Length: 286
Image 1 (cartoon, helix red, strand yellow):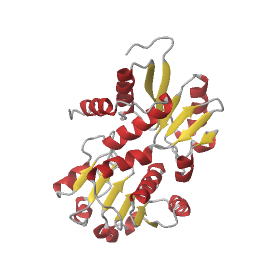
Image 2 (cartoon, one colour):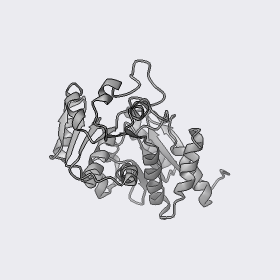
Image 3 (cartoon, rainbow, N blue to C red):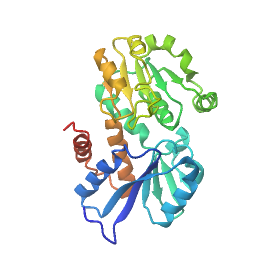
């Protein structure tokens, strides 16, 4: 990839971003398409978000993905917010427009893609979602679209849980101490927290669930960890050891990334297979 004076900039803002495969998959796609664009990671602390967005605008950046912890915090800084993103209350894709930054959300499509590949009937089933942040919002929306009749959200912040219930009155919420009784009735368990992500803080557990808690899940349960580094995560590894279906977040990353790229480039022709190949090679899975 040759970077020159006409190269257009895309990127990722979040904290942390060093682990992210987004630059790998996006640059693979851009190179395959022959586009004079480059995608870069930008580590941005929460208290520097307004200045970062202003700086990206001045530098002429054409668009960015948004990851933890900024998916909700960026919304007040958008001049436009797509209907889906507004309904969810979270933005993961920002596009430069004549009026200013425009926010969208491609996480819902990305989240749903691996579940649709399983070709399971979700109507009448129960989903348990770990975490109450911006990613959880996309997961709730995705589970609702897939037909789950019971959606249980587990979190530590009463305020965030109340905010989620205000947006989706049909969901149930509880704190982590109340989780165990819900596990035997869980058909789909989704981890939206950063617990288990590389780089791993020393004081943080390797998995949001213990092996004993995983034993409480029914034999048909699907365990879906939105994290993709390490691969597999401890949660996915423990689940597969129990012969449960364990999904990591790699395909979600690829699918939401492809949808973001389609928005920025204004084309539906995105080389998803090239993005998948690049990600798997980077993880040593190819």
